[in-house]
Length: 545
Image: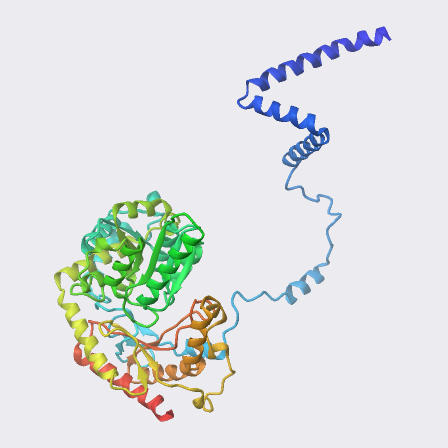
């Protein structure tokens, strides 16, 4: 016994020395004393827990060390197929479609889209007829599309910088022309700074979540465009909607939000009002002075999407701030589209220097998307120069709008919800009731009321009121309006229906004919084109009344 103890004594001494060395090394590590206290107290209170944690540590180490790409090298678990069976399986395999098949109506709409030969402009050439058409379908309000000087400057920039930016703005995608356009926009609108985004749609859908977080309050118009809806959803903020372009409803919602906060003694959070200058859905216009009054009274910040008003209204195209003679500094964030207003590409957000600098780190589309091509930035800057040097184009545009409205307002079978100064004109069918459906049989859709998703966001009273007042049929009106579009095209006038994403938007907008009045056409050409639209409306709709 003594001989065996003498034999193991060196081993015990080695183990004791190794443990002492390990303990001394462990004690030198930061936080080791905390771990020792935890292990001692845990073992003293519950020894079984110590054993369980030791097993979990061993399992974690084993999992980290084992190979994650072990292959079955012997092939024992593989199913062996003969070449003939493999060929049969490949022949029988049918891939799933990337998108659902188009319906008959969608195929007909796609087939009816006109093809333009050459560049788009106010008077493009149609492939089907070879004739020149009057274009009231493209969003070319100031008539910049096809401008030869802008085109030449874009070509020069293309030869100097190439096409793509090859990187996000915060890395190596920013060029001097990008910074020039940001300065031009800020100086043109009268704000401290502005920031460019490479896609118009992702501008507002990035700006909203950059400032609005979980727990913040957003009060938005019920009919805001789809890009705003996506931005609100991404932000995960608490959302309250007010009735479309109804500032009395807005004030009631603001008061209700504050009353609810005081009742539950909640903390003060960031609060935002989000709306559009000219609404994409119907062409109506917001009352900016009243919005600013309410946002100051209730301590909110205002995000104003001027995608359809920048470069479209105002004496020099500056949008709502110019129409209402309101300093741009009164609006916390002005968002716009360079693609629509300047016929270039991308979008912008203008405001204070702090607002802009915050987005350079937190604007998802700015951080992770490649910067817009340099030629588009130059096109935008040249467009602003055109606005400054020839403000008469907006006088011509408003003259064309008045001429178009003078003709359309006399058509009995339609209604126009758009603002009289808006170059974006929506035309709704008046009283397209189910009495007409014998000519256009359709399934009784949920279109008899609001979409279920929209209905769930409305109060019961409001939903019931909308259901009772709605006397239009979605499918029927879309088919009638498509007939009007095709009738106009046969007479070389391009117009389009307002397109929406069914079952995805907050509120299903009423089908409408959308006219984009442009300064690129003369008053006589506008009167001729709108006269064709009037005749087509009377021909298609009037005979069915």
